[in-house]
Length: 161
Image (cartoon, rainbow, N blue to C red):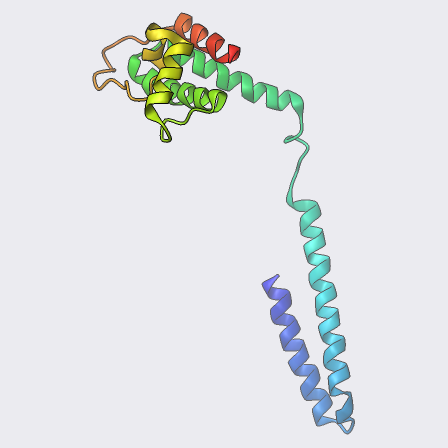
């Protein structure tokens, strides 16, 4: 695109000089306008061609590809629930807390007390320990994660909301 603009400006200057050096100086404005119109048409043609070839939406709209990506992400998250508490704290806890905020409309930053009260009502004390964004362990590498059962219970509670 920058090349088209540069060539167009150079062409306008050359045409203007050619017309001004000739006997018909009154045609200079008309000649410059014609070159500028051609430059705009060329720029429009290039932009239209880039729009057509710029994005390939065949894979973006493919439902089977979206399903495969979703399944891979889900399998990874489920596998992380069986590893260490550090993995749970790093990958699952923030996602679960964010989903809880979205589902209930309670923002921790807005009203921390209401956030915790609502969370304890939804999850109970035993599950809230695994969703609470402030309950990250510093020694999580040695501690086991809660496992798939807890993840399943948390997700079922979130689904009921």
